[in-house]
Length: 348
Image 1 (tube, rainbow, N blue to C red):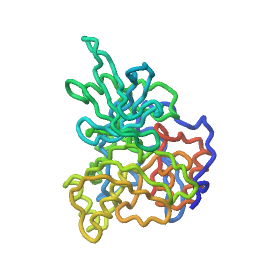
Image 2 (image 1 turned 135 degrees about the horizontal axis):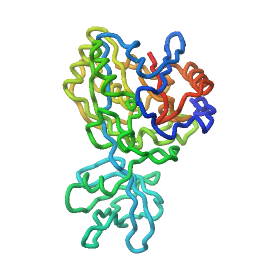
Image 3 (image 1 turned 45 degrees about the vertical axis):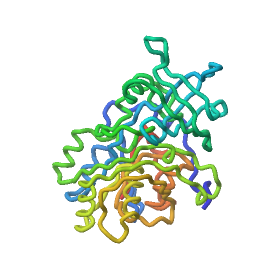
C-alpha cells in the first residue's frame, strides 16, 4: 500500500495556529462510515449524536514541558532534547537536535541554580536511530518540579504562534503526566459538555496513553506496511475494563476520543482476544492502517490529520480510505481548521 494514497492538498492558511476561546465552539464534521453521509455542526452538538448507554473513552494523559534547551559541556553548543519515553526514574529516551553533537558520554547542562551550578544535567548513555538518545539525568530535588521550571511545552512544528495559556494544550481531564504531545481530539471538551453527556446517560471512561514518537513520527517508506511504530506506554484501569465489558455485553457503542484512545483500546482487545478485557498496562506499537479489523471501537472522535501520517491511515482504516479522502476534500472546501488546534470529526 503506497503512501501517496494518503496525501492531500492543504492550504497553509487552514492550519490552526491558536486554540479557540471556547473549546466546544469548534466545528464538527460527522461522517457515517457506512453510507458516507457528511454533516456539518459545532462540537457542542455532539450531544445529539450520542445515546444513553454509549461509552466515551478519554485519554487522561497530561503533557509535560518536555522540550529542554541546554548547553553541551566542553564546547558550549546549544542542544535541544525532547523527552519521549521514561525508562526508569532518571533515564529517558529523548529526541536530540542536533543529534550529531551528542555522542555517548556527552553531557548537557540545563538552567543555573543560586550556587551557579546547573539545575539539571543529562549524560548520553546510548545512541539510538533517527536522532534518538538514551540519557540519564542528574539533579537535586523532584524531577517534574525541575522540568516545570526549565522545560517548554512541545508544540508541533507547524504551530508558529506563541501559546498564551499552556492549559489550552491540555485536555480539561488531563491528570496523568507523561506525554510529549496532547491527545488533541480531547481539546474540544469542556467540563460542562462532559456533564451534559453524563446527564444524557453516556458513560465516561478513562485510560492513559503517553503520547511519544510513535504517534507523530513521520512515515519514511513508500510501502506503509514496512513502517514500524515507536512503542508508547499505556494503562487501562479496572473500572474502565469493567465499563468496556458491560458495553460489549449489552451491544452498546464504545466511542474512542482520539487516535491514542483508539490504539489503546485495540491493543487491549488484541491482548485479551477471546475473553473479557482486564486492567492492564504496558507498551504498544500497534500500527492501524486499511485492512485492519477493529475489535473494540465502534465510533471515533478525531481531529483532521497531516497528509501521509499514521493518523490519517488509522482513520482511513476505520471509515475507508475513499470516504476519508472525500471528507478531507470537503473540509478544505468548507474551510475547516486543521491539525492540533483545529476542528474535529465524529466518525460513526
